[in-house]
Image (cartoon, rainbow, N blue to C red; front, side, top):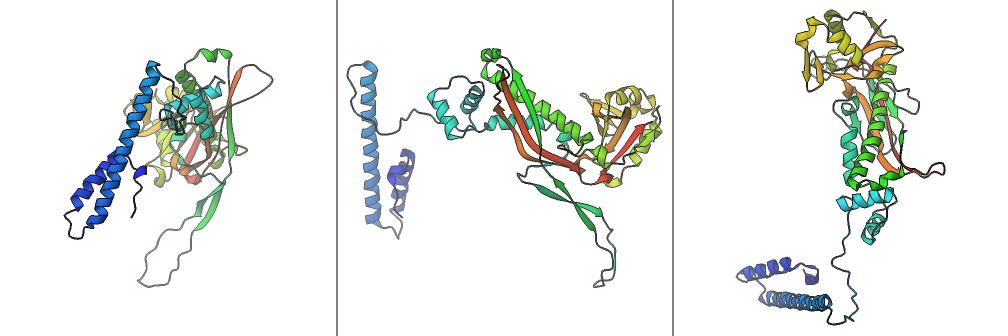
Length: 375
């Protein structure tokens, strides 16, 4: 195999030269070939040494201004940097471009070569802020397929049976349906005044990411619970018994246990509570008989060992509603992650940013949640 020594680094050349020395004593060594290879390596190293000396000489002349460099350089400048989409420099250039700030040559080149895609650092920051474990969106079964998707949904599941070895199978087969997820666009238009020019790049980046992501995350969390299925997720409310089982105006330990007991055992381990802050703090936390069953762990509450998610949307048709079930049975697909772009309009002189992503979601098994409401 012929090696291209010009493509190898100095360290690689030195390493290869050492390997040649080690190979000389091998019984099958081709001494003529090894000698020729050694000569070629030494020649390449000498050429590079001479080239570096020449570069140093020219730089010294330029630095002290004692001579005029007339040589035309055809090679690419060694000190010219190209910033990848994963670098802080690229992220800063991307933010400056959004804000219509002046870019230097390297920043313009980096954005042009990458197609001005959203920086990796921004993608990670958006995702970390979008998927918060304390909320419903952080607990559902989440996937990222770019095209329309269909997920199997068992509508009839028959139990396994026992029989004689080799016997005829007599049990009926399961009936499997499907849930089709079709992308809806979740959009946030963020407007800021011209005073953004006085903000540091890091501050602008975080402000854009936090505001757009928080707004879209809130909309998705709300729709997981009460989505209309029209250009939005299909909410748990629409999938679980439309006429919620009533609970008394004065909640008791027995009524709470009754809610838990109504959920299928297959979903008990991963179950969470969803209710309003009013229901939790004014109806449940005030019950002294539940003191031993409510845990506050840094403002993450648990009731009978299951996390409590507080959502104002659990007030449905003016009725306090309690949901209890396993969010993993709810499927969300992100067809296109949140992207941020400048938004041009002739109606305002303010700077505007448009954040948008494509997503859809639906509960795959309606028995994964139970719903109770005060009358």
